[in-house]
Image (cartoon, rainbow, N blue to C red; front, side, top):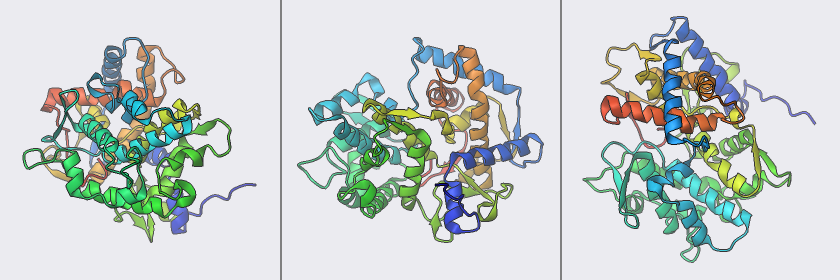
Length: 414
């Protein structure tokens, strides 16, 4: 039976159309074409700098993965910070369980960890007692959330700490979350209250959808929902769409069409679209980062994930910063480097859109430098090799690691 296309004139249909990477890519390409035509008041695109950027990414990829075995850009890389195999620690804690049980626990962990992975700020870090190592930024957030999970912070049952459930999430406040993340006046974490509120909203949303998340409201229910047909395969975009359809209620409500929450989807006056979708630029960055981070739990459970490149590059400050620091994008506002920007500012929306579109153009150039094809190096590996690491490297050289732009964050976008 043919499923009718969503109606862009209805709020639900418009939201559905915006919950796809087809919309993300098409609208990002609109803004890139406009900037190339000289019609943008925010950016100039220097296409000649793309080749140098690709060489920088390829060179760093070779240094980081000299054997050519490039893993996915995934939260699991942060769980490996400091050379510690924390996946093995989780396996040992879980004990002798079947593949589906293990996958559910891994998905529980990854979902809360990714939602906590917004910018930490320059002054926060986390000390791991077992290894004696101190971690900051994304690695620190990953390691801290890993140990918070092991400690049962997100479970309502002290006898079953290695899970996330709706009741456990709904009791998370800034106090215990800040304690788990070693927050203090001397160790401030950007957006702590926003992160805690996001987890509580997640608990409410999980509890309201037992058909997907089960009676306890566990994120691991995604595994069962996506493998019920028993085919042994799942499409990457289907993972993303299920996340967007089921978790859209967790995001701040400022971005809506009527009562339909859009999440990481923002207004830009130059974006064309049908019906109520006109003027909206979708990204779904955290949801896509989560989708990338769920690839491995499915694969480790014996499920083949297809269509990896249906997902887009991630529009965040490392990938976007690479394009600015490599000279591909030149910001036009005279105060671009000193101003405090909001996520909804047209300048930031356009920067993120240009990042998505240009990563699609950068990826084949990187593959050519490395003599790899798309099957050997999907976009998830280009990002990991890759663009994210190169963005961090150039930021370190230019500004001691700080992003090129100062974006005021509540902990739910960046």
